Amino acid sequence: MNMKMYKPKIGVVKNGLTIVEVVIALVILGSCLAVISEMGRLAFRNAKEARDTTQAELLAENILAQVQLGIIEMKPVVDTPVTNQTIRNDTIEDTGVISEGDANDVLWLYSIDVNNVSDTENLIEIGITVTQNPAKTSHPVRCYLVRWLIDESEQ
Image 1 (spheres, rainbow, N blue to C red):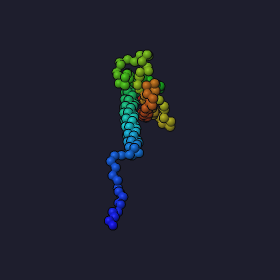
Image 2 (image 1 turned 180 degrees about the vertical axis):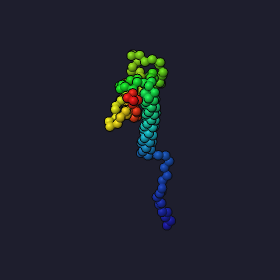
Image 3 (image 1 turned 120 degrees about the vertical axis):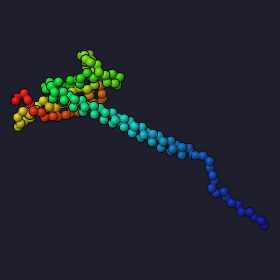
Image 4 (image 1 turned 45 degrees about the vertical axis):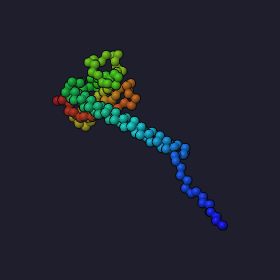
């Protein structure tokens, strides 16, 4: 008798992907895209904050130099507009004169604190605070600069 043995087919080859594999791949892709877009958003926000902080530091140094030169009077002031810079459509413009109606358009405000240093003669502490206008920005940047000067008015 000639009997042929039946051999089952082992290792069936499939062409294509199953629906589960496609769904898993899409979930991984979506997660990666969400992480990358969040990283881009955070990088943009940090770059903007660094730019604004640097500008606040430069403005504080400029105001302090003007106080030392006598251009700005050495007396306490609060929330005074910085020169004549205003913001319109996310650009800084030099308007020449700030009128009362444009007070909300001012991008930067400064304050000056003048204190006598205790236990010393003729020494004054000047504190300059430069901050973004809270009416213009949701998270205003702030810079505080302190300098000690000799009071020449008492000599």
